[in-house]
Length: 87
Image (cartoon, rainbow, N blue to C red; front, side, top):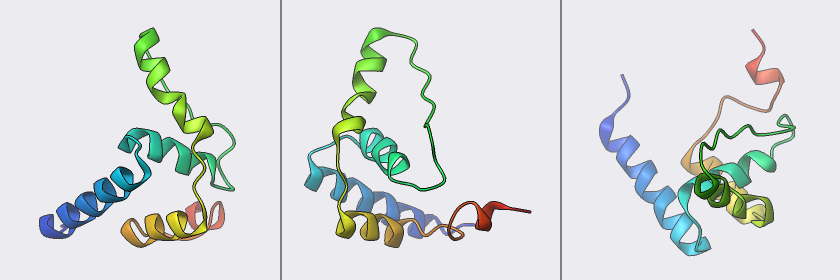
């Protein structure tokens, strides 16, 4: 079972990173997806024009090497895609 303190620490670190980028957490998450080799098209499901407009900044948000490294530190994944996700 995950340690709630660890999860809270990660979320707080992520929110701090997002504030430093002056971007919403969801925008940073979508921008991160756009920087991943195994991801060709993140799928969003807006139901309103406002929801669609809220995800568009992710397309122009450039995440440099240090930011991507920090995100990997905060949320370490299983490894590089697609190999780490193969069964």
